[in-house]
Amino acid sequence: MKKHKALMFLAAGLVVLVVVVASAFRISQVNSIQYGEAPGGSRETEDGSVLRHLYRIGEQIDLSGYEADKKKAPQGYMVTYDSHQIVEADDIQSEFPDWAPYYSSATEKYDPEKYLKVRMTVTNNSEEEASPLWFRLESTSWSTIVNPQLTALMNGASGMSGAQKETGEESAAHGSLTVPPHESRTFTVVYSLWEPTFSEQQWQNVYDLPYSLVLLDYPDKLIVNLTEG
Amino acid sequence: MGILRIELGRAFLNRWFAAALGLASAIVVAHVAFSIMPAAAEQQMYVEGVGFPLSVFNRWIGGWPGTVFPTLYFFILPLLVCLPFSATLYSDTRTGYDGQVATRVSRRRYYYSKAAAAFLSGMAVAVVPLVLDFYLTALFLPLVMPEPASGLFPIFPYSTWSDIYYTNAFLYTGMFLALIAGASGLIACVPLLFSRLLGNGVLVLCSSLFLDTIANYLIGSTDLKFLVPSVFMRPDQPYYGFDGIQVALFVCGLAALELVALYRMAKRHETC
Image 1 (tube, rainbow over the protein chains, first blue to last red):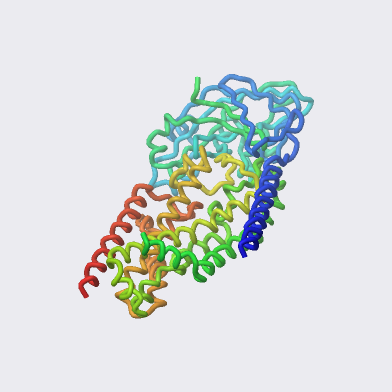
Image 2: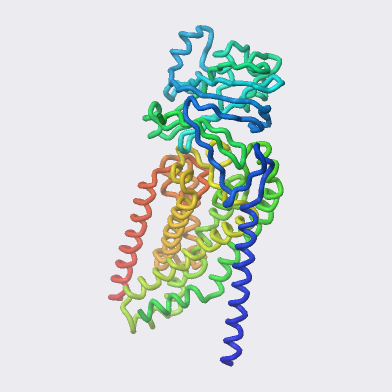
């Protein structure tokens, strides 16, 4: 009887061991899967997490081959960001009298939107016309995409159309948000800071949050720290 | 110690404990089969379309509110945690078992031992299937840390502990599991308080579920949702975030209420 019990324990132990080893193997396999091809050769993360590339304001970022919102940057596509500025809706309205805040009717119970403006210089060393890859704005747990209307307005374009607004991609038909081959162009990129998307504490410190611009192209994450010197 | 050991044995080695674990595990297995495995097959689409893959943290049963499984799991959780042992004070009273025990140990000790056993069995029934789900999900999806810019994760800045979620998702998950464990243990003790008040065993067993459902219906969408366990226990937070301090106070208040109520019950029946 005792021998039978010992054998049972041994068998159960072996089953547990096999399950643990097989699980560990499977989890390590799932976490080392390489998704797509990263620029500059294939990349693989050891733990499935992102590879972070940190940049400072004024530092030139080579985006050749990177993809964002299903748009691929051509070879020789460089971008530089300058320091940012947070402005009120009134400031924009005084600059563009015909402009009205898009969400004005829905935001009555909230503080008026604020906007983060940042200058982005795109250098296109390729042989083809390039349209900008829009970074997203992030601060710890908060994130937003580019404001397509204001960005178009600030840069003299007539607007971005339909579904492209979702991703911040400009319409070729409206077309001035592109950079011709072997030229550089500076854009003012605008992001909306809307109270309901922040936590209460974040909104109280909206001018002092640690903002960064990010571009996700897994497994790479390009980060431009806007608030670090 | 003797009565506690006996009550723990009764709580964990019974068919209702196995049934509760089995039912919860069945939901977990269904979640993995019908939600995780199809999601894993679409991984490449997310990487190409969004620039970021699906992760364990936004697809395990406590990580994504977009399927029926987390709603079902957390809805019936107040009943599942009570199944193993919570109605035994009622049945012990009916069968005269408690009178037998009372000749050997004090009723206070007996009631507290029963509460401890109900607490621990409820805790196990709530947490073990969640850990199993996290483990099974990790067999199909990578443990990629959440990125707010990806837009794929259900935790927003106004959600509870959102900063922790985006800086250390393991800690966030652990904190919610601890909250679920504590709250589930206390929920499992609620029927003990009704054991002498109600005359129907099924009602006693379902008292936690009924109270939670009524509270959810009345205040689940208001600022008082921190009083509804099936709402505040969800790590995927399908509702606007709540204040962690309020939940901690509620959990401590419930624990204190149960201890005092059991003490008073024991005192009253000691003299009977």
